[in-house]
Image (cartoon, rainbow over all chains, first blue to last red; front, side, top):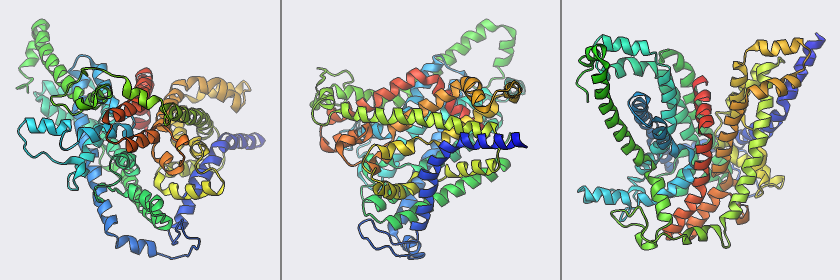
Length: 291
Length: 294
């Protein structure tokens, strides 16, 4: 008994230093934010009032909120597209190429560089009148190439291209690891049964790597929900509000308009969406994934 | 693509030499295709580096002059010298990233050991609490942290980035997974020999977990180095800026100086590329390890 208690104390001792920080910089701020959501707190004015659900009703009438939801949805579309591309890259790199490790490095490189720095490069590549992308488009006969980041109806798609490019390497690395686990005998069996290569990919390989696909989808959606730095650096949410995604709208309300209470409310909507995605993961892992 | 692999199967079984050379042609074609697509992936980097050495009139020349006609260091000099020198931003970023990486890795290893190898009341509930905090987006924490830091006087100081950066929930998660994968009997026998938890931690598990710890350190360093959002929220004064913020500042200030912009982005990206090329093995291991098991 005595030994057990001592053992327990040691356990706490190991965790304590980390836990102090987690309580101070994660748990307490999170609780504080939860409370702030129900107030009209503005950084610029001293009086704070409890306003109940006012922030939420305001939110549901806020057209920019709806636009930011729509933008977020377009932004998240980059995740499955990038996963699909990465699957084919990984398939190719897994068996059919020379210079495997060099190629792997080439595809992975974008992921390791800061999204912010590299988005400045993309900004120039996307430059509408003289950028390299539109120059190439013009030279293959497209007279009026899109304005990319500079027009409201294309800006989100330009962001998507950057994001697909950025995530591709990460997705590929996960798929490469998963493909290593695919038993050679199964591929052999499919071949002997006369399955075409495409058939083998669709009916054997793809189901076998479905846990990775599921994982990439969920983690990709969640981490995309949590970032805005790359977009902030290039467009600051513009032109108009055409690239303001939900996480950025929190930032804008808090630090551009100092609407701390309102920003907190939006941030918890963001949390709710992440929470739902996580729950889908918990439930879906058992249902949809073939092990 | 290939018509069908059934035709290939008997050939492969009969004699390998012919089919081998046939396969190599396919393999070579695939390699070339993947290299072409791979070049597209690194094109932004190539363009960035090339532009940083060009003259202003060459920036948007088309067809692109990949090798500058008269390469010049002038733009890099502008980035590294003068009032808003990147030397200062580098110093700030390195200071923050190094302190946080060492601190966070160390504290995470401790906590991970506690969660993986000791028994105490409420351990699993506590771990669930940790996991649930991974769901909370940083945007939820910006406002309360801003107010808290303002009250205790560390807003607009490096401490606002360093203090929270010392505590990595992801790190605890990653290392706990690794510690759990080490067979129990290794520690059991040390226990029976009379070793305490601290001894087992430092003498046994930390040496065994070196690859996982290296992975965490490299990932953490790159996150801290690339962190833009926290710096944006918590830093105000220019002399406190980290590299991503300094770079943005440079770009806002000289927004038509495209060569300078590309020299500035090179200055912030190249170190990460070097770290990656050196630590590639650990980075890839860490990513696949944490993701596949998670």
